[in-house]
Length: 220
Image (tube, rainbow, N blue to C red):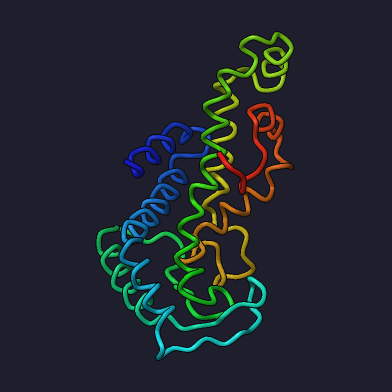
């Protein structure tokens, strides 16, 4: 269902983004969904690695601040097997297939698995805004005039938001180099979070505020 919803949304804005680019970014997200489908197994293995007496942690500085750096051999082995299976099912691989674990990028198994729990925090405010746009201005002439003058109508505003998200939320942005890229297996939300961090600078940010947006870390 998640794949179908995304593919449908990508097709919704493919004319604006560009057919070739839309197909590439759709494959990119399908790769991510294929990996995240194994998250329950990965959760189990992450706990096994975290509680292992054979792999002690050391307290060191990382990109996330002072963290417990600990190797995660069980998660690492499982990810290599999952990636191998997923790659055989795709005609071409989009992005990087580097898996960071137990280093300055991803200090331990918990931080690795927790990254996949952030998807809802990113998507829920966007979905909420898209759904509420039809209601904004319905009973307010001034708001209706504002949307018409700046975005033409609610449908055009939706396309503007989705086009920008699909164009920049999965393009590998937000990282300093290829090794730390926003397209690596553990950092495939880097680009999406980078897009979130720039939301206040977007031309449509006022629409988010009109729909009740307060941030990507609150209750929805």
